[in-house]
Amino acid sequence: MPLGLSAAIVGDRHEAMHFDGFASVRNFKGEAESSFLSRLAANARFTLLSNAEASGLIAHAHAPTTIIGVHLADGRELHAPRVLLAAGALHSPRLLERHVQAHSLTPELPAAGAIGRNLKLHLLTAMVAVGPRRVDDLIRKTTLITHARFSHSSVQPLGFDAELIASLFPRWLPRVIARQIAARSYGFFLQTEDGSDARNQVRNALTSESRPVLDYTEQRLSAARREHRKFTHAFQRRLASAGLMAFTRRIDLNGTAHACGSLVCGSNPKDSVVDAQGRVHGMRGLYVVDGSVLPRSSRVNPSLTIYAWALRCAALIARENLEQRATARRRPEVLRAL
Image 1 (cartoon, rainbow, N blue to C red):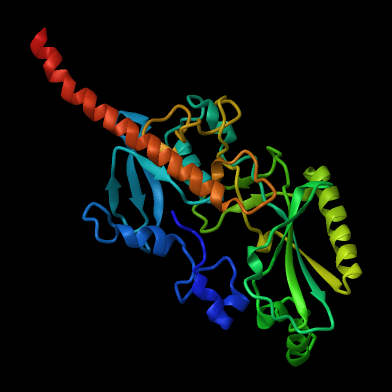
Image 2 (cartoon, helix red, strand yellow):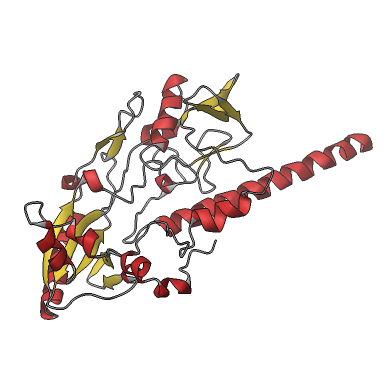
């Protein structure tokens, strides 16, 4: 999947100055729409349903651990021999645990106790560094800054223009002044891998609430908190030596990103939910292909890791399907020989 930037972006100052991790309206970025979905649009075997919320899993009538489709919130049902769960680390656990509870599968599935647990979120700090000169750099988001002393942390420049950086300033500051300061500022995101604690979890996964409730606190992750604090101060000092005055704002749960780990991958069903092939332990026909499976968040945006995991699972499923078809074709020949 090509995910790079088009060289033409440097010729469009507006796009290049504010370019961030979002889709490009001028198609300067290789993302899911242009690199993947558009290639499937003409395939008769592919259908994309939008605004079709999945509300539950459908089990085989006589085997609740075998998944054969999904319920949609509008009452429709979709059936398939394999279901790939990719609702994200905050919603995939809700769908799975809702199914486990509805069919009383907790005693039967050792993995049931790990569903929704081990939630991981990067510790995030937004930093604005102000200097005397106007900032005219292009495509700033493509840089990643790390340091050997802080092995779980990284800095990524915000691909924001002055107007967006100004939105990070206090609201009492007049917008005209905020934009003038922002035009002389660099924005940064500092992130630290938070580690794993089983108590950090997505709660109330079984209710009909439209949003999940997070039982997550940094107080359970003292080592990550210390590193993030030291890393932030160290980066501020380096910016000061370059003539830039830096201000910070911690990003709390209301602005969290990079959630993962709530359906963690592992070999032991007692402390993990999916196996190395993405299959849910103890179940058939159900795979997880989103960031829920990641046992570590690493110190960078996990998107590429999630893409790689999904592509790997898809390749394994395709190979398994071909092998099953080959076996089915050979079976009549064996019967005739007998």
